Image (cartoon, rainbow over all chains, first blue to last red; front, side, top):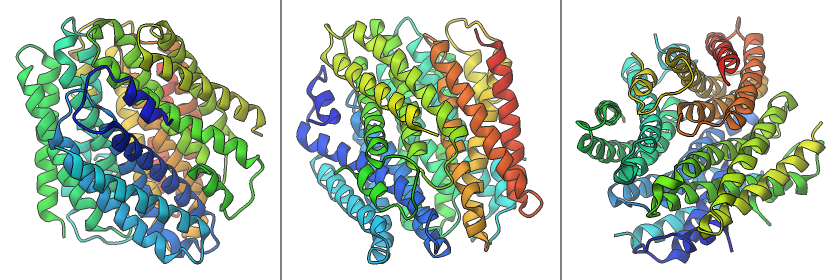
Length: 134
Length: 134
Length: 134
Length: 134
């Protein structure tokens, strides 16, 4: 069981959301942040780094946004949808944009293929969570 | 001149945005992140900490979101409005929500009054930047 | 296979370190950051929040330090031990201090027991990585 | 007066450290994080980006470490030198290493000169704070 799930399981209050859905979104967000941080670095090591500049930039953005979204959605105390909803929308947009760019390099660079996959998984998880949020 | 402005001044390419507007927004974002991080900690030191739980939580969210928004808006290379616009909207919402909560404690706690001010300033700066973004 | 491992597997250059050791450390760092972020929030929801203030504070520190250490150790390009070594030492100290505090609450709060476990696992992983670093 | 200073001024407890020294260190840390984030992006826009890879990598590290150090040193509640001291040491090392690299490019790129200056200022501020810490 992931730490996200274990900590939701031991949360002292109740919350109006399925714990397993929330935990798998948090896991997808942390995975995507990790994939984007590492992919930006992998791009920096490529001989064609000048071609990878846009990919590096979007990976840095996506890593920052996913890390923040994981932290905000992990907090259940005095949850406020006015903060969570637009942040999830911003995160979906960042994952979509980063995935699209990484997919352009996926046949050339395995790390971009893996990163695109992490972004798409995270995008879908955030979309599912957003649908469930009240 | 702030470091945000000095670094925009020495950016190697051109960008379709007024540098001083962008720099003052980045400064307001970094100020707000600092105010929220410190206010959450000030709240933790109050004898009535149990009354400050919602304020702590929103300050932690707002600090994370402002730090990320400062980083993303600082990056000019291969700028993509599909990432920047929804993130600025999320940041405006976070600043609005956090300012509102801090204002409730402003007469009781000076640190909450100062934090509310930083949040409102940041909110307005992000709104102005969003209007200028293409 | 974790995203940390998949991305190390597809890194374009070679690096002077066992990939599985590095990947499991990065995973432990991300797990610990997640556990600490959630535990700080769980503490905020406890009726005895005034007793948990030190725990909240150390969890916030440990989450920030683990997130940064995960990012820095994930970057392999132009790796510099002068940056990585002292950061790992700081991370070990933060995990040690946070685990110690969480252990004091472990019989009372399940979330603190789980968080202490994540901190100890991360501490050991960072110690192992530090031993292997050149 | 900076927000760091305003928030320290309104901190509800006392702390065993000169507020102005602490505030100026926090300001130097936030300035350095901003300079490094922007310099990494400026490097990505340079025609000779392949020569700037090491600089980009060290700026990303230094930005992450300064942001975390600013947050940890901003928290005064239940302050623990076992966490703060090694983190300041890691931050000094990161600023030193990043400044050294940026100085190599300072005559070629104004943004690297400005970033090196921010790193050196931050390094000195952290050294001074470390000397004062008990």
